[in-house]
Length: 56
Image 1 (cartoon, rainbow, N blue to C red):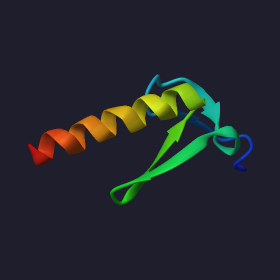
Image 2: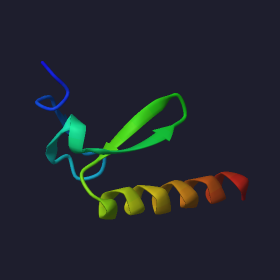
Image 3: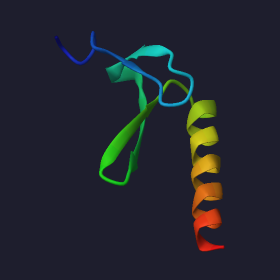
């Protein structure tokens, strides 16, 4: 199956989206996929809060 037809789930809301249209963010040894900028921003905020909690 080509990447433009392959479907993946958004990391946050689990909406099925074409892999070619997904936004990507690299995490520790893996890549997250997002359907839109709102889900990506939510993940970034969550990630920052988790990092801060680890330091405290």
